[in-house]
Length: 264
Length: 236
Image (cartoon, rainbow over all chains, first blue to last red; front, top):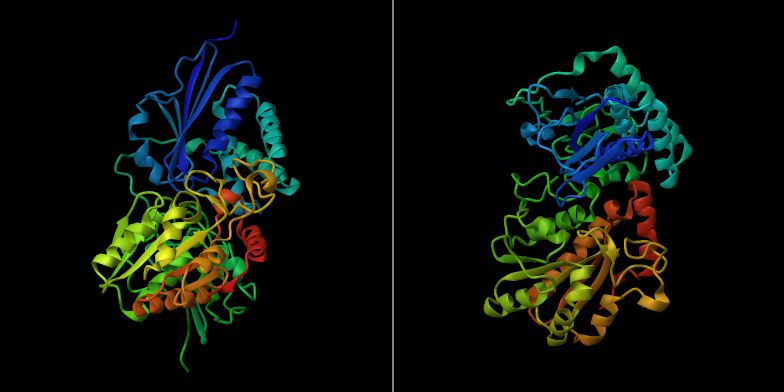
């Protein structure tokens, strides 16, 4: 007879970060491992960009209600989510703070969109599930969505990277300070040379990528390490290639970009 | 670069990343700046994604019942003829639930400017089929592609409205691929309204990356399909 477990997991992050995908993978893997498991998403009318919560419960006995008051394991993926989860933890809760670890992926040349699988790798240590079952569910989920093979391998790499990172450095667990304030990039990022000046405002940029698509000389890219409105990288400008045509400024839906030619 | 008539404190907007409304409302903002009519104009917003612009402008804004933006703004114009009124709506509000209001307003030649944003589906409710959905396009309610034998052909609004209106009407269709053209057409619609004789109608082909489930490159690929299906330019 196995030990009685009833693990309540709450994952909180920005909508679009892949919060619900983590919940789904954990839930399906738990069912494959002969657990009772329930997963329920919680978000507002925003399809992207609100705070998104995923409630997952793993248990040996029957689960009667999908939501819960206090989580055993709380994963926080973005700063805005901290306020939202204030009522879901007490002194027994293990809190895992994975805010701002996107750099770890870009260091290994993995697409930042695989960030949620990196987070899944980190929390996999705390789950009573086998690594293989999680990866199996992940692969099946991606195959069902017809996603390219390269993205699938990147997601697998991100998962393994997260797992290694989680085992090596256990100091990311901490108590959330209720008055926790985050460092906000308050000024515009400026790229300039003697002829032109290109500015982007991270408080406005939603990382939609339209400027990168529309740039006629391919001077723009997502290489920045500064996060925009929805915790995604903002675009950067290769100022040597830029011809200051102003098309990016014109098409930016959120008025984040400013281009100017300097007067001679 | 932000239009002067935008509120700074309501930035960033509520729209999804990559939403076409950002580009369209910027064009409208620049047009309002150019004619300097921020104090004398009124914007009517429909239910749908357009209502997320309720606090965006330093302009009086009304949010109406679903599809009833056109008659509300026509009524406002009758009561206060010196104002410039805009009715902003989506393709669901204009061509489905609000079609009779739109057609009768065009038939009466109400001197109002209607801006209709066409992204081929109902975006706020999660991407269901709209009258403008292209043939074989996949949406939430047509998972194997739209069957035009059963559900009819994609709805061409400006062409139909052009046949109802008199010679003073201004009717055009633009795409957000060319923001300056969008702005030019909106400016012409404002000028036409200020003359006070005919109905002005601008349909703008827009994008919805959230419901099309596309990234920036494939969004614009799909937009070029839509542009290919609907004829662009000034119709009347």
